[in-house]
Length: 365
Image (cartoon, rainbow, N blue to C red):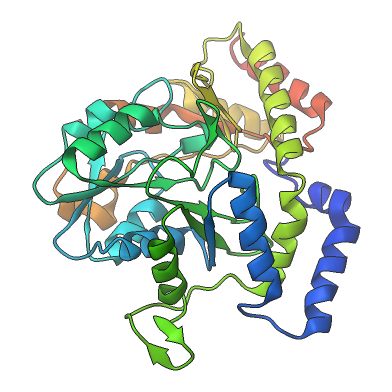
């Protein structure tokens, strides 16, 4: 069996440092809002070259808290990509704001300024561009549009750790950015974890209060907040793994290039990398009208695949109240019907990658 991801392979490479980091926390006996969390926030901010990082409980919380910190709530509308993973939308809904879907560029499968412009109303308060699969959105036109309409930009970087837009790291382009450290991410914890980053000191201070019940100091609450704190064990683990992020991203890019070479002759829509982008291939996603048949063919040959994501959020039962029907956002809908994620992780043996490519080649014979 070729798995979709192999967590044990990565753990073996960093086991000694990970165990030492966990032991350090256990010996200190402090588990929430301690030295490891502060150190990780400093190191992650330095990695991104941005002044402030605030550790939180998950990537979904990161988006919700980022929106709260900007004063967004009931009555507001937030535009995001129709094909994003539902947690992006969940976070918007949890603020009381209304998620507004927009179509995507069919090549990069990300939000564009043109698709956003079509969805702006007097109630729009923010745009949440999703750097999907590790490929950045084309941010300059989005930022220009946002400035012209007095809108906030909150980057969803859950799949874009280390990705670059015109040489700048994703997460440093908008007003605020949200990161997930779910275990599958390019920088993954060993449980739920997240962070919000910003260059705005006042926003960062609001975030620090909001994640901890709205406390300014202990038992004195200035804001109506939440319980969403990056715990010390996850922070210690992330500190170890952050040192390897660029190396692991390079390994992902190498394997993606091998896929591109070995699948080039097949009638598949392969991932696109724009000239202004540095893709970090959180996922390697091909597209085909025969997606379901290909998935079954690979399964029969003991190759695991996944669908990211099979149904756009405007067609999910949970968001039926938004009132959309099939055909509303054709590019997003077509992509969701055709996407197939192949195994790709830094430790994926190249011989396994070749077996996957050969299996796909046989499917088209």
